[in-house]
Image 1 (cartoon, helix red, strand yellow):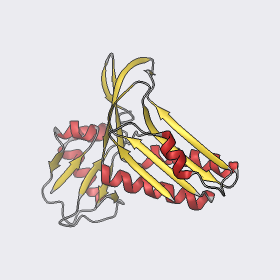
Image 2: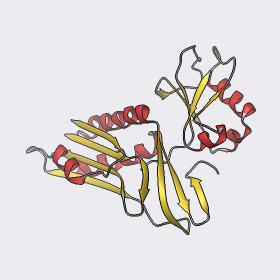
Image 3: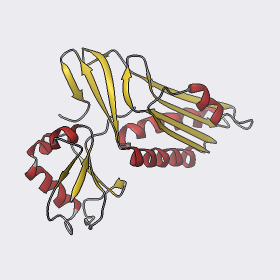
Image 4: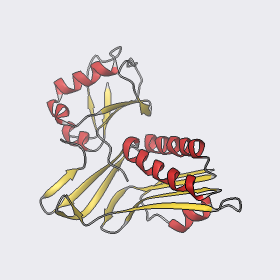
Length: 78
Length: 138
């Protein structure tokens, strides 16, 4: 599935999005773990959240086909 | 009343002030955030905001709604810049109005504090020693 990236995540992924296979049915916590395995640099961030369909996802939420997924590294607006 | 904006063009304090002004309100409070020339002892040359627009607008709206309910504000305007900014430019404006001053001060502070915690906007600082995404790494 495609996962969009912003900020420092864009640099880690090497572009505006990345693809991870076989994540439908995974929880958000599992997705985060898979991301760190595929891209160890995510493990070096202070933290990162996952947005699912334009809202912050909870660790226990399950990924469904068609979800819009986005990696949200620590925000720094204002 | 709530007015949210995420713009690539300069923000306008007068516009925000006019939006929140109301005959019933005796207190208007504003926070204007600008780009500093120094951070962590390093000279900053300019700055770039990356934004997840759709969600940023939604999160900004949520904060404004919560602030209105929690502090009994009449109106909230929350405008943020995106793209490239130079030193001294305005990055964010919070404007709130209420009948008396105390909720206006408290509500305005709440809005900017929450924005910094939850709104998906990222600041990349360009300094003499290179560029950095703020808050990303320990």
